[in-house]
Length: 318
Image (cartoon, rainbow, N blue to C red; front, side, top):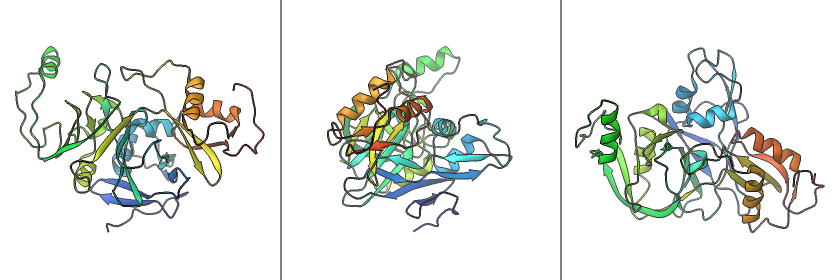
């Protein structure tokens, strides 16, 4: 086992941070049946040279989730001594806890090792405007170390329009945008791979593929077998139970082009709750708190009620 990072405030003992080069992958114990939340929020004090991009690399977090969890803090000059929230508490995605689950709305991948009792989670770069990543089910069909890159004609044309001529084949190495490893998916044209642009992780920067920090993709390459199922979802609002309480985690919804969505967010939250068949019709929700969570979209699980209906609800806005 690799050494743990130094403890920081508000860190549960069950949170295991395993150092992997410059980044530290999160491997967390699965909660007991009927529970949905893993990890715990942490806080650190910024140093004068820290940026959110650098902290994301160090703590294995994506850039946008760092921004969302720290409203009002300058991402490029947070100032020495500023308290920085590390959003390392997660409601697990809805659906089966098996294989790889990617939630586009939170720029994050979850991996459930077969036969294990842990979950590993990693930040991702996803498709930008015009190159949206798909919502689909598939599987890992191949694992390729030191991949070459054959840019599609559309990508070569895009770069040519900006005055950059791409070669037909980019060899393996530090200039290869696929990084040191790629997973080929059964979804034609889509990969999970490393990146030579580490500061793009946790943002909409790719041509539809899923980018990871190089240390993360190499770690994942050692534990994910060919044939592993891959489920890609887009769930900006996740509900979960922990300790007999109901929580909501809200992320900024994306539209089909990967831009912030203008959908009715309150309706989307209600639909997400209804889709949790184990909760529908048996919850008491404080809708004033829900409105605050939706407005904040900070990606942190917030208690909003109880699942058994014993709490008095605020009906405004229901």
